[in-house]
Image (cartoon, rainbow, N blue to C red; front, side, top):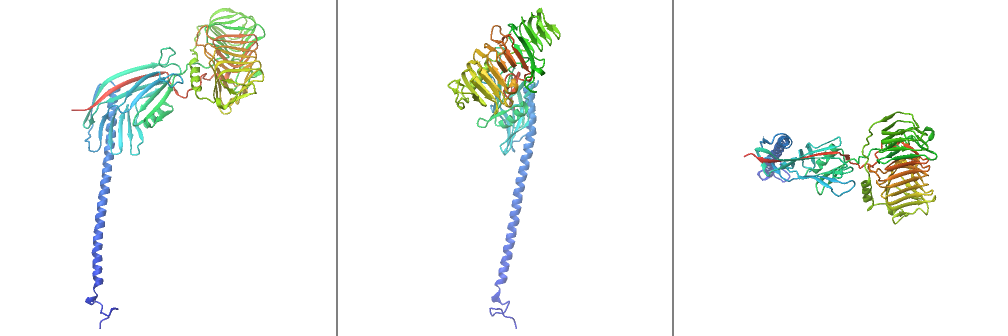
Length: 587
């Protein structure tokens, strides 16, 4: 007897076959799904494989194009900068995986000259379109521009593959500029033809008509789709700071021509062809030296580098004169004092009289001085820079355009200040220049007088430099006290124009007065008189050193550039050439 199921019917009955049918349907669906998954996997694999193959193909094509473009760039340089006027090159591009074409006028180069510390362009040396040859494949761009090869990938960042032929060495900037023209797609064979060559050389000179004068700035600006990479190249090749403008797509770098002023060479240096007169009618005119890097001046340990230098004649007339150092006369030497003593050597162009004692040797020979340019326009530039933007508002004692020290000491901290007149009169009037936070620049436009016991004091001198830019014609220290902490003369510079007449009468002065007159006769003077005591140095025009005065030269000044550095790489020579070539597709 058969078994009955729960339904009351025997198992396997025709009325109970739904389970078999369901399993059959499930198996059928499973097969279909399996086939679907297999087909989908195959399709996806084929798709991914196709994309991979396409990517590999694009990469291979791009690599091939990069090599081709590098070779083409080399041929372009041979025509632009070499001896050949025509080159052809097979490219082997079929256009399926990217295109190569010439973009005439793409990008530009501009070379400008600016006067010292001015943003007004004085001369435009070059303003040329560069053009380029571009290959594009997907999100990759390759370009030959200006003699360099550049690449931009999917991230949009440009980088340099090979460098242009720009060059900077020994203060010389060489710019062989390649200008690419032609409007064509390049597929099979490129023809490169020389179109024109223009060259120019610019030299650093003090001549009035010179393009590159002392202190001039030269700015090179590239406008390009690849400006960031150009800028990185400038930074590396030219060792300077690059300014970027993303909106204009430009990279710029600046150079500066030296101001051509030699360092301070001795305690007293007259740049004028007029006489240096040394006359100790009472007391002893005296020079010696010390080194503030070691410590303040001490007579017991003083050195013998208190040199006296005159570009013209030097006349030592009467009284006790002790020069502990060398004496150099660009003209004649008239040493007419029996009480003269010179510890070092004496050089002169001609000898009138020689009395007294010279411990070193004497030599007659032509004396040549490196040009010491007047600094009038340097001062003018500083005035222009500080006048519109300064820190006067931070100091209540800068009333109007003058310093009011009648209410007690006035302190100027790090910053830029400008006044018409600086007058300190009386022992209760003190101006303090505090360098604890950095440099202080003070422009004085008209007159500068410190007298009758008034004091100009520089504190925290180890932290910076105080610079007084005097733009008038009368500068007087009369019974004044000018001090610098630690006797660091290098921390106070007073600059004056060529025609300034200066008096240091009695009192004390520590610092440097720098007022070269450019070698012009009858222009500018300094008188050091009546027991004036100077620690540092004086550089000026016609000079009188009188009546028991003394100069203690700070040897720490010897390696110092008198003019503040501009922060730009130095430049003395520029060699430019603009070399235009044309690219066409071979017929």
